[in-house]
Every structure is written in structure tokens, then in C-alpha cells.
Length: 225
Image (cartoon, rainbow, N blue to C red; front, side, top):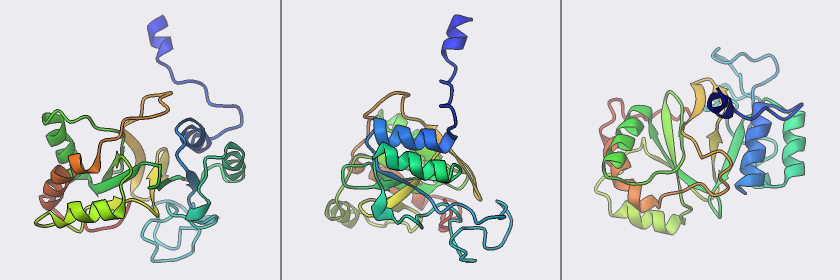
């Protein structure tokens, strides 16, 4: 019984939301810069058609899950700023500002992502955290420069449009969040309390992700999450 109780999640901070807890963990423990996403417009209902995003763009490809106010450049690891943001907007999604000293990521269609993880596990490659939605999976990798990424992609015979890169100047939606596309969750979560989760080098995973994306049944060309 003690072992079972010991595995329970730590109680949430009084007066906090799941998003605030996640944002504080990223910012203060891991030193990953974060900012709140746009969120949904007042009165909007997830899953319903129409201008549900707070940006009020009826063509918004990722309703609620992109920077708006503040903009991406405001991403921070400052605890006081993070608390102020999510105290004001407790349901806002958590966005990781990728690149620089923060993790980068590669995302691909969910079916291809599952296939790629199986292939990488079979190769004995150590992977880092993986974010999953019903439509796309994102693998966090060590920071890379655009120049290095360009060199790696140039060496590929074909790079599918369904494979996307979240590097310097980009962002990634982090769990927990219930988006229009479905639940945003950790397929492989960072270890609790781990200040420096392992991140593989982009070169070590790129070949497998390109191959898996090329074989995706629908090409995975939709932006979604």
C-alpha cells in the first residue's frame, strides 16, 4: 500500500492550475522559456466550427495554441512573470519557445511518429521527451542551428512536407491541454523532478523521421497540432 501511495502524483499547488504547474516546472526547474498561448475566445467551445481562437481569425489553423499577447519574444523563465500570466489566464496553453538554449523539436503525423519511435527503439537509440496529439507527435531534441539543420536536410533525397521543424524562433505546444484536435499529452514524459531531460541530437533521429513521414498514409500535410 505504501508503494502505491508513493506513486501518486504530488498534490497541486493551492490555487494553481495544471497549466500553471506545467509552466512553472518548465521555467523554473528546466529553465525552458515559456509563454501562454492565445487560448480560446470568450464563449467559444472547443470542437465547434467558427472563430474559436482568441485571435478571432476564422481560418486559424491552430485555435488557441499559438502566441498572441504576449508575443513569442516575451517567452521567459522568470517565475513571477509566469505566475502572473497563468494567474490571469489559468486555462491558457503552455508554449515552449524553441531554440537558443532551449530544446528544439521535430514533429510528424501521429501514425508516422509511432512508427518512427518503434524504429528508433529498435536501433537502441535513447530518446527524449515526446509530445503527442491525435494528429501529430513531436520529438524534443537538443538545440540546433538553422545552418546545421539546412546541411542535414540537403543530404536527404526527399524531405516530406509533413515533417516540421521547431527551431530558433519557433514554438511547441506542451501538455496538458485539450485542443480542438484532441488531448495534448506526453507520449514519453520527462522524469519528474529532472532538471535536464535527455535530448538526442537532431542528426541521430532525422533519417528515421524522414523515412516514417514519407510512408505516412495521408502525408500528414494538415497543420493542426
